[in-house]
Image (cartoon, rainbow, N blue to C red):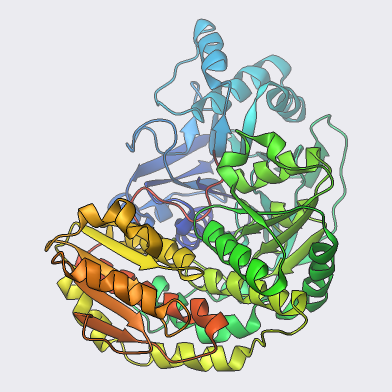
Length: 586
């Protein structure tokens, strides 16, 4: 998972590339590099660290030239080192590339190229693209023909941008995002519109199996067979330009604080799609719902709500697991795929598997131009704006909001979603962080934390554990309340903290009993509830609302707790170690 960017125009390339990389850093931040073409030479600077740190050290943005490529890396092949950072030059130095994805046959290609005298400096699979493209260009002396041959030899999912010594840029897309930005004085090639949104909102979304050549003749697009392709220019929403932290210390806190608005906006632009999805679900023989990480936890909430209120059975599937049981999808079923980015490799693979069974794909996604949206028969947009913090926050509650809207229609109004009432409840939680900050200080040195919830609150316990793991690096585990005596109780002692998700609904009494059993073993209890209890060592109060909708608000204090724990532990809540926002590789 990486971000790639290329620029071809009249401006100074390096500052444009560095600024674009900063905006896309959520996609990968192990290392960063830039290459530019100056006269007849390709210049490369790269190093380990975040964009600002490496730029301050190496002055990436001072490289001369009007043509260039840049990259931030999330390591898959090879350690996090300067030499493994992108861009990667070819052996001769006459071509340099930046790459996102995985080249599955790189070992065979590398061995063949080494026999032919090509040298490799890195441990990455990406470097093989540079040398393979160099080999083909030396043989064919034509960039278009070299791109056709190179893409025919590569196996895997990839997007790459190559810069030739002549000053030409070439790029290819195959199951990884690659977008063209068309500016007044230049062109951009990027993984994400955030890479160039300050410069232009005119874009072309490439399809799989297409490549681009940018030279003095302008922009040319071809399919992998070499046939010219025409695309319409699309205007992207200027909301993507609004990715500044403002007065907030971190994007994560900003995005947590935006939820009173994003819960209301979720699905607002997709009302017809939500209604149509409801009809598909209501008449489907089999319904599956899939996602990864946070999105899978949203899927678990959907399973519970649709079973309880609409008497409709749904099978949630972790996206990465479907590959190992592809026959799990019955023919002519519905698969609902949930993804913030719409580019998660595991989710897209699950969709492809389901399509082989002739399943109809419905998606809940934030990026309506994403690969997932393009693969779907029906798309429901989260409409929550850019989410830069790697840990999902507002996208989770936006997903839940859409799921509740579907639930309300499925059960013919047996529950009434009042988004304004939910928004007000969330605003009340966000109004005062004092107690949560105090609890965060208590958790600074602990090693283990458990989160307990029953029924629909168990998926929220799982999501809470995920947030704590991602942001604080504390071992955290969600536990179904009824399973406490079937193993987890053995872990409870005076060194442990347990968060009890315990709103005053039909689960309240049983969950409070579990809390007392935990307290008897010496563990400290953090209660998330609208009702106080003497069993709680710490009580985080949430507003009382209709029972069905507690999941939308009870996650908010735990998002804040994870954030403030990260601050206390001096970890970066926006960019957790070893993680990336949208995992586009398996």
